[in-house]
Image (tube, rainbow, N blue to C red; front, top):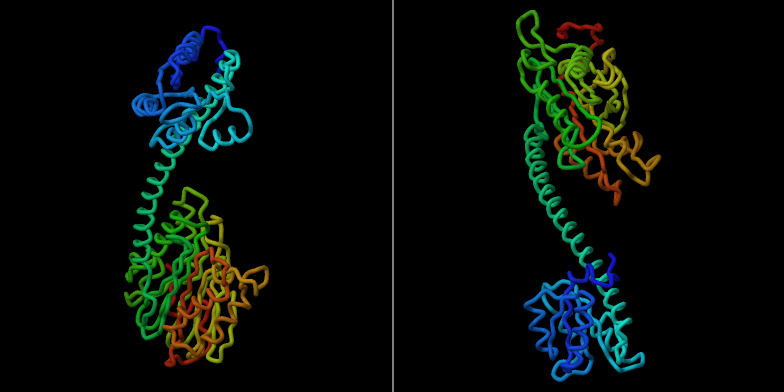
Length: 436
C-alpha cells in the first residue's frame, strides 16, 4: 500500500484520534494530519478519548504521555482492554528518555514512541508505518474470520457426515448375523469388528436343507462406506433361504433346496461383479459347506486367508484347499473347490486378514501372522463355541497392546457335531451338490 503521496491518497481511509491536554498542540498536530489526508478527531484527555473510541471506529491514536486523569500509558492499557474492538495503532508523544520509559510504554500497550518536540517528517513516517501495520493486522483478522467461517462450515459438514456414518453403521450392524446360533444342530459363532464406523468385512451362515450349513467370510478391498455397501450387497446374496434369491442354493431333483457347488457360486459372484461394478472394486472370500452327517467340507477360497482347522487338542492347521483369485478382479477368473474333513468336535474357522495382519511387536514384520494366530487359537479349543470368538477378540487386543488394529477383524467358526459319521470323501460333484 502506498501511503507516501503528498496529497494523502490512501490516508483518507484512516481515522486518527489526537489526545493531548494542550489545545495548541492538538491544533498543530491536527493541521499537519489533515494536510496529509487523514481524518482527525481530537480529545483533551484520556477519559474523553475512551468515550470516542467506544463510539467511533478509530485506526490510530496519537497521544501525549503526561495528561491529567488518565495518562498516555493508562490510555494504552484501556485501549487494549476494549471488548470486541479491532486493532488500534498507538503512538505516544513523550519528552521522556531512557530504556525504562520505553519499557513502561511498551508494557502498557504502545506500538511506537516519538520524542518531543515533534519532528513533522518523522511523525509522518511513523504514522505511515502505523497505517501499514493496521492494514496488515486487519487483513490478517479478515483472513482469520474467513478461516473461522470455513472451519465452522467444515465442522457442520463433518457433523452431517458423522450422522450419516452413524446411520450407516447402525444399518450394517442390523445386517450382521447373530454372534452365536445353532444351524441344523451345529454350533456356529461370528465376529465382526470394524476399524471405523463401517467396514468392508462380513461373515455369515445359513442352513441348507436339514443336513448342511453354508458359511462365508467376505473382505472387500479398501475401507469406508463404499466397501461397507458392497459387503452388505454381497451378504444379501446369501440371506434368503429360498433358491430363487440365495445365490448358493438351487433346487434338487426332489424339488427341495440344496447346495450349489462352491466354485460355481464364486464364479457367479465374479460374473455379477464384473458386469455391474463401475469402479475397480474387488473382494476376497471363503465359502464353505459342511455336511453335518459326515464332517465333509467343500470349500472355495478366492484370494482369502487360508481356512483354519482347530482340533480338540488345540492343534491348528491352515488349509488352502480350493484356492483361487479374488472375486471381481478378472472377468476370466476360474475357481475350483477343495475337500476337507472335520472330525467330531473339530472346528472350521474362516477369517479376514485383519487378524493375521494385526500389529504386534512379537510377530514377524510387526504383524501377528499365521503362527501368532495359531497361538491364540490353540487354548480356545477347550472353550465353548459361544465364548471362542469374544476371547479371540480380547486376545488380539492384548497382543496388539498400544498398536491400533487399523483393519476390520472378522471370523466365523463352526464345530462339527458329535453325530457326524466319518466315511470316505464323496466324488468331486457328490450327490447333494448340484450345478445351477
